[in-house]
Length: 500
Ligand SMILES: Nc1ncnc2c1ncn2[C@@H]1O[C@H](COP(=O)(O)OP(=O)(O)OP(=O)(O)O)[C@@H](O)[C@H]1O
Ligand SMILES: [Mg+2]
Image 1 (cartoon, rainbow, N blue to C red):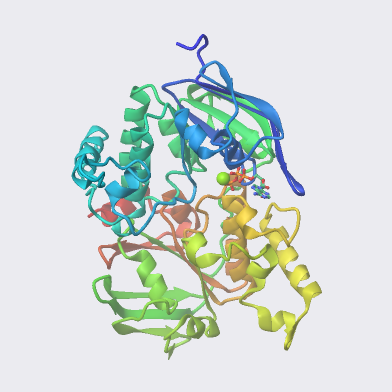
Image 2: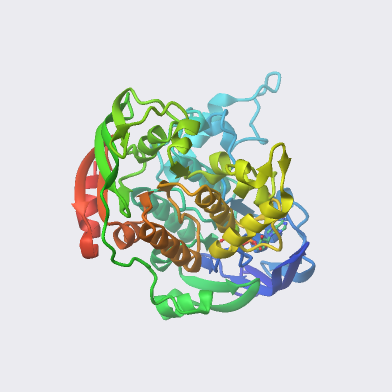
């Protein structure tokens, strides 16, 4: 092959941004035909290292060797030409184009006459490509926009494969997809591996790493910590390499007495999405909402929060019926929703951290019409410290934060508005184990103060570890209500009621 066993060697890589050292003399070695996990807490430098590999950033220092040759990568096209592709943490397909158009974007085959774009060939090639990768159910002619996120991602991976890549980088590929779809993705990954492709797999889901990866490399604070085979690694050792502090109380739930029913939903319906949804929520309670992706969980909470308009049904707060016609109405009644899709709904990427955090709280930090800048900084830094947002200052643009730190800013924003009913949609998606544990303890503290939480989550250990009660949603209906005192519900219980 190429004179040594490595497909890729990155050595002595350093990279600083103003005020942040993202990578400090880091290294990473990848063998062909292996799946290699890159793990570490939020802000450890994982995405930055990968962006260096595909030429988005230039390293300040360091050497990259691909198939035994020293290389310099100036931009993503050069990387692509060398057989390196990255599936980004936040997917970026062209939503208004069709699936096959996305795959062949920029390299469309043209017919002999007039050099017109040859759609029929593209569709045929696309079908063949999907067949090879076992994803025939994805229709090549569908609009990208209409596909579930999991499928969009598989399309992106198929696209990478079609470029004859030797090295595919997946940055948190499973953070937005359900367990069933994860299985499918893993089948696809195994197929790629059997074709000798090297895969770099970034994820915060430790279970999945043990299932799909061959090797693990750990980063902490921009530094390389260790590499080992997965079969030599165990969970505790991995946690301590990543976090370097004790995580023995991972789920921070403490027992406390629940109060009266404070919030009720009665026979709520939204045409074609869900029907007859009823549940109550007690003061100090955490209610877990689980189900497969597409079951209607997000639509239910979006309706409660006034983003969608219910076809029928009632919402009651302290026994009084609420008229929620807009998000403003919901917020005025002490309801907050931290959304699942932080990039589109939760954050203003071009604003800085303090502006994002205080945006729903402007009345409190201004003396009309003037903003009190000191107060703005004060409030946002206190809450950012509690959540451990990793940043040099409150004036950092949210765009520049690592994925997990962006998620913490979404949470910070809603916590600041001090709601009675806090709805969290996938609150720890993309967040590292240390920060997850911090978020659990924040949730626990809030409920001790008498706040109530509805938590949507696709991570079953989290639902079971944190909820007092669990509702399972299946095909737009509540299929089970499970009492989870003493964390007695099992994953099998949930799967039984969630399965289609
Ligand atoms: N363009 C940028 N400008 C300024 N700082 C940046 C930029 N990109 C990354 N950083 C900072 O560099 C550090 C490493 O970020 P990186 O995105 O590599 O982390 P990560 O390991 O991928 O984390 P996560 O698990 O949260 O995605 C963070 O402190 C981040 O805020
Ligand atoms: Mg990242």
